[in-house]
Image (tube, rainbow, N blue to C red):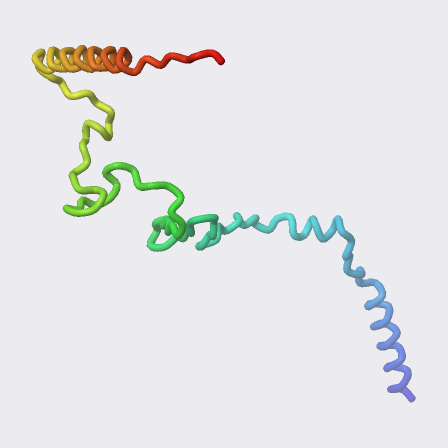
Length: 136
């Protein structure tokens, strides 16, 4: 019986000790306080992005673009030189930079003479092509 009384006393002390421990707080404020100190991760950019007409992907620390629809024609000089086909000559750097080439004075005189001849031809063609309208 001595032992039974000791067991009852130990159990009573254990129950009172367990009752005195605080219950865990699962309230919203407490959870925000606990997890607010966590580092915020930046959003990771996806490695492959599908767009209309092209695909962007990141590889080898570079951004690559693969066009699968011909949206625009290539710019002059951006296509490799070929001896046959639409790009039959090397691209002109003066065209690409919209730079005028310096020309000697005789070129200016030739251009002026050619414009004068074109005006004379246009005037004679207008005289030949006179249209008369007869009212009905």
